[in-house]
Length: 279
Image (cartoon, rainbow, N blue to C red; front, top):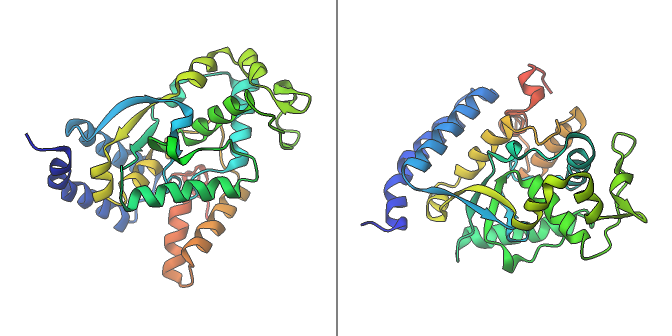
C-alpha cells in the first residue's frame, strides 16, 4: 500500500489542475467558489487526504493563507465573543465547515506557518491570547476566529485580560469582572460553549503532504468556506477597504494587473460582491 506521501504525489496534479483553472478564471461569485470548495472537499474525503479531528484551542494555529493571508482580524475575535455570548448564543452548526491542515513536522510550510503566527500575535497588541508555537498541531483555515475566541476566553480564566472598547454596538460589560474578561461569566451567559473551551472544535483536516504539493489548496478551501460561513458577522465597506489596502501593501501591487488580482482576492465571496457592488 502506498504511503500518504506517495499517494499525495499521485493525486496532486489533479488537484492543482482544478485550483489553477479556478484562479485563472473570471467567475468569482460566492456560489462558484463554494461549488469548487465542495468538489475539493469531496475529493479529499474520497481519496482519504483529509479526516475529522477535534483539537483543543491551544493546539490550533492559523494557516498563513487564511482569508488571503490576512489570517485573523484581532478585534473581530472580541466582537465574536460578544455576539455569541450575549446576542446569538452558542450554535455548533456554525462550526460544521471548520477546516484545518496538519502542521508538517519540518519544511518550508511549517517554518512559514509558525513565523506567520508569531508575527500575527506580535501585531495584535494584546487582542489575542498568547499561542506557543511548540503546541500547534493544526493550522485553521475556517472557523479561525472562533478558535481564537475560545483560546482568548480560556486565557482569561488564567490571566487578567483587559477588554478593548467595542463601541455601542456590543455590550461586553456582561462578560467583564472589574473591567477584565471573565471566563466564568462567558460560560454563565453562554453555557453551550464550555465543552468547546475544554475540547476544542472538530476540523476537517487536510493531510500535510498534499497541502505542501498544492500551494493554493488551503487558500481556495478557506475562501470557499468563508464565502458561505458568516461567522456571526458580516464585513462592512470599511473592513473591505482595509482588507484591500492590506493585501495591496503585502503584495506590493503597482500595475493594473496587480490591482485587479488584489481586488478579486478581496471581493470574492463577500456580501458586497454578491450584491454586485464595486470598489
